Image (cartoon, rainbow, N blue to C red; front, side):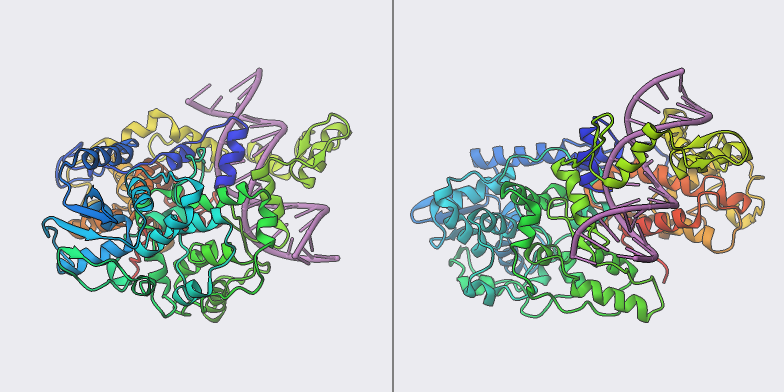
Length: 593
DNA sequence: CTGGGGATGGGGCCC
DNA sequence: TGGGCCCCATCCCCA
C-alpha cells in the first residue's frame, strides 16, 4: 500500500490503522520486559509515543534558543549561532564526519567548539540551523541559492535537493556533476521546506523501512579530516567528495539516508510535493532528460531483499526522479540476479516510480492510472448516473449495476455477483469453510478481512500481554506437540508465539514453511539469543516500524492463525509469501544463516 | 461484533 | 508503451 492509497482512502474519508501509524512521526518505544512483563518471559511490548519526535525536536530547539547545552558555535561573517554538535552531526554529513573524526569515531564529548563557516551566507546558515531543529526550511526565495550552496557544502542533501527543485534545476551543474557522479545519493529528496504534507496513509512500507531503518554510517562517507576546535570552512571540493566517487553498493545506498529524517518517512515525500507544485507529475517526469546515467547494476549477489529494495525504487529514488521511468540498472541487475539464481520471475513490465509517493508501479501504462489516485482525476464517467471513476475497468464494472449484468453466478444458488471476488467470498459460505481462525479465541471466519477486522478489536488484542505459563516459553516446542492443539494452554501459547514472532515474522514463517509441527514458541531454544536478536532487529526497525508493532503482532497472528496447525493454507501461499516478504523486509535481518 | 456486498488500488497478462 | 482485462488484498459501509 502506498501513499496513493492513503490519499485515496483519505478522500473516501476512511481511516486505517496503518495509515495513521504512517503519518505519525513516531519515534519512541519501550522495550517491554520492564514495562509490562516479568523478565525472562515474552515481555516485548511496543508502546509508541507519536509526539515524542516532535517534542524532542522542539525541546532541542528551545535549548538552542536559550543556549542551553550548546556545545558548538557556528560563525559566518561575524554572525554567531549556537547549536548542538549532536544535532549538526545528525543533520549534516560534513559535521558528522568532522565530529566523528575528532572524536575517534566513537564516544561523544569533544567540548565546546567553534566552527567558522564564512563560505555559507549567514542567512543561509541560520535557515539551515532552523531546518535542523524544526524540519522546516523557511527562507525567502532570494536566498534559495545561498541555502542551496550551504546545504551542499554542509552535506544536507535533502535541503539541497529541495532547493534545487525549487530553483527548477533539472540537472546539476557540470561542477556538481563532477562531484555527484552517477551514483549521487538520491535516497531522499526534498527536505522539509514546504508545509507539512498532509497525512498519508499506507505509505509504501518498504520505502519507509528503507528510509527509516538505517542509520547513517559515517564510514559511508569520506569524512573530512578532523580539525581542532576552530574548524576551517569546508571546501566545496572536499565536501563534494563526501559521496563516494565509486558507485555505492546497495548497502551503502541504503545507508545514505538523509540524516535529519531520522526515521521520519515524511522526508521522502517531498519530491512529490515539488512535482505537484510544478504542476503535472507526468509532465514532470517527461521533462526529465532521457538516458540519465544510472548507477551500475547492483551486484548479482543481492538477495531478495535487496532486489525488492531496488525494485521498490529506494536506491534509485533519485535516479528515477531525475530520469524518465526507464528500467533502472538496479532493477535489471536484480532481475538478472533473480533470473540467474532461478529466483523470482522477471517482471514483464517496466517498473515506473511515482514521483509523488515514490511507489514503484509495475507494468507499462500503469503509472498514469496510479497518478490519478493522486490527482483525483476521474476521467471515466458513468453515462447513467454520472458517477466518475479513475479507471475504465472500474467504470465497466460499475456499469453492470445499470445493465443488471452480474457475470459471476453462484453455481449453488441463484446469487449472482458483480465481481469475481464477491463470488469467491460467497462460495466460501456454501462450503461452510471458515479457514481463517483467530489464534486467540479460535473463532473462525470465512473471510480473511473479517478475521483481520476481528483481530483489530480489543477482545483478542488484549490477550497479547498475557503471560505465558512458566515453561511454555522454553519447553513446549521441544516437547514436540505435533497436534499443535493439544498444548496445555493454546491461548497463551499462541499469544506468546505471536507476540514474540512479531519480531521474527520470517522465523515464524520458517516454522510453517519447514516442518509443519504446529505452533512453536519463538524463544524456544536460546532465549537470550533470540531476545538479543529481537533487539537487533528492533534496532533496525525505524520508528514507524516500532509504532507499527501492534500491527506486526496482528499480522503475525494472522500468519499463524490456525493455518499451520491443521496443515491447510486457506489464506493461500501467496499471502504467506507476501507476509514473509514483508516480514523479512520489516525486520531487515537475515536470519537464515 | 459479525456477515455480506461493494469500492478501490495494485499487479499480471495480454494485445 | 499504453491500455484492457482480470485477479487480488484490503477497506468501508450497512444490516
